[in-house]
Length: 255
Image 1: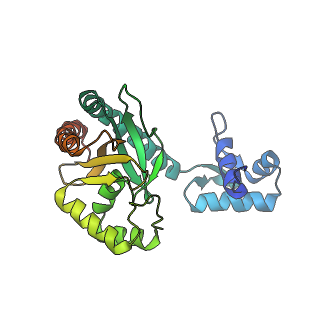
Image 2: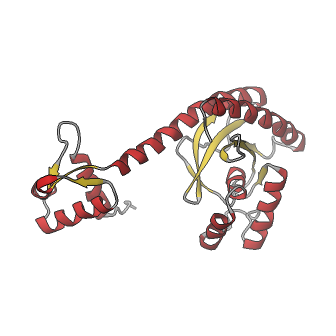
């Protein structure tokens, strides 16, 4: 089935793209002509984008790009740089353990992969950079939730749907809250087939000097291969990897 898109959002981005190189400003008449919409609608789009900081109104009814877009661009750049900084730690871990690993960040109730390393042997699950995963049923997701402030965690728990993806998924809020308290106390998180049957994962946090979590490092693979002994070994090596990652981050003044 074809994916349905929001036309208003698409038009807003079309307006922003008009302000490319060689076109520093744009007017209502130009937007109306380029997008083939009436002037009233064009004006409403421009005023909305101005209110959100995406555009700034200049003299004589013209608009230029606003600094809100600069901020968003900086955030995207920082996440890309963070992934690049963490990549060597993942590569070294995967080379030693021969299991897949990844580094996620937390965004709007989901975890997003910003870097990964894959072993030469086959994978049971393929996570790619940019993939978004549920937080409540993944090791790295539970790790992030455990490190949220009380208000942000409560807001997440009030709005999330705890769908049962497998027979092992935590689906009751009080059980998830208890699990997150344990994760925060012990400093790492497991996923024992909670998102996909037969997949085990382990995650540990990467912290700034001030104790703020900025990323996580995790290993994952088939449960048939990752037994208790390998989990214990993986935990030890992931912790060493996070120490290396923290040194790299501190060197770049993160946190």
